[in-house]
Length: 146
Image (cartoon, rainbow, N blue to C red; front, side):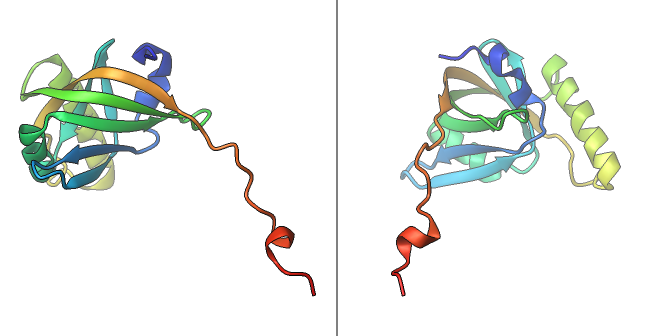
């Protein structure tokens, strides 16, 4: 497992991340996330602003996957996580609220972007997603000659 502190740039909110959850019947749900917050060496937090379906899925199946990206080299990492709790106060919630309030103020969306809760996840595994080394076929290799 890659230490979360070693991929700290992935948690700066520069490149949107993806959260994958599944409903009780196995139906997948993907959410784009503007920011995944690093809480400590084994936890991340997501801001709950519009998570109704996602929270329903997490109640039925608390295991999820988050894909984060390094904004410097564009490496992608897959985090296997388990939802532990929702927080509506405390240090993590306050940091997240300040960040979201600043973004909302800059975009004129203060009424819409209210933070409902900080969703806390334990990270069980973090691994780099390998990039494909296959080169795409050139146009001349795929077209018949005249």
